[in-house]
Length: 96
Image (cartoon, rainbow, N blue to C red; front, side, top):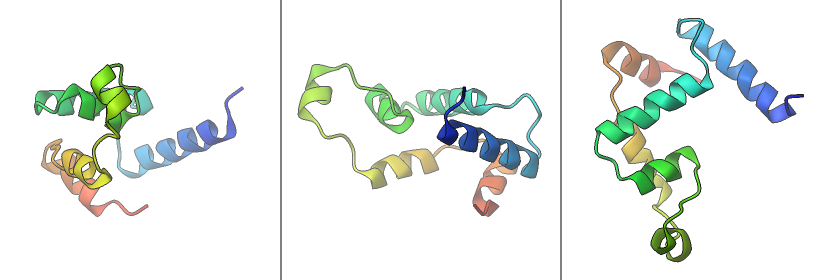
């Protein structure tokens, strides 16, 4: 059985997918894969990518001794990703 928060997220993603006319096969992991690939191709350090996507850092130096990047720096990294004009405009104009 899907947990309530997962079911809510799935429903919200489906509504958003329809609202911005993404193809029917687009699911959460499709979007996650695209974001990770874009970050990697923009030479964002692995540690930053792991923070953004919520993975646990395995490096002792960062995992034990660092509290991670400030939220604003992570937002700046995410906002630096471009998906092309059409998608970028959808993102800019999207209202939650």
